[in-house]
Image 1 (cartoon, rainbow, N blue to C red):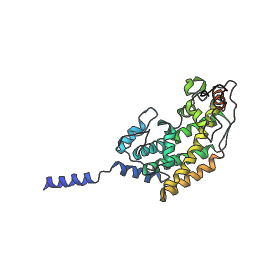
Image 2: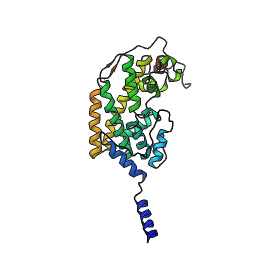
Image 3: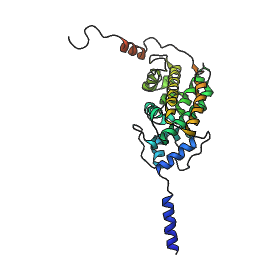
Image 4: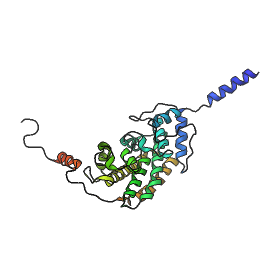
Length: 275
């Protein structure tokens, strides 16, 4: 009788084992709350970890892909953002921004809810003129935490790194990801400014671009999930228009300005295909 009991118990446990999509849906349900609670089995991402997304996705039950993210990968990043405040721990933002704008499903919903939750938490803290280095650093730190794929230059500057002591490719004047954010339609242009406030302007452009994508993505949602998203976006909308980093000029001979001017310049008369 006892062996039969244990066999039945094992069968019952196997039948109630959660699938990866069950876990993704649970993450989405928690993120619809303003104070989400997370499965204790999901590993916590520390600042020293380089495998955060992969580790959380594996705990959910599937591989991680940040080039063509699926529902599990999106849910893993949602946890990274909303629980661990480590948006900059994953790859470039445009993959995640695209998913937030267009993708459907519980993982995509979780990603939108998590990003909007973090943005609604931090944006009101900076809804004023950012006139000091401390203001700009605090803003970049929070953008790096809240937005998936945010430039690691923002995280470094937000943590107090001296821009003059950064490797050139990581510094705000030369970082490719700062340049990319400044060149977004919400930004002042790739040749803008220098130093810490150049970084802050890039971070603001990324925040506003992400906000627009979240508004677009709300069309992919319904019910309580859409309601939660829209409530958070209203908070960010009200705050974002008041965030105003101090304007700074680019130094003479700024490399990004020169390159931008060259890209805009018309071709010389002898350029192009022979006639």
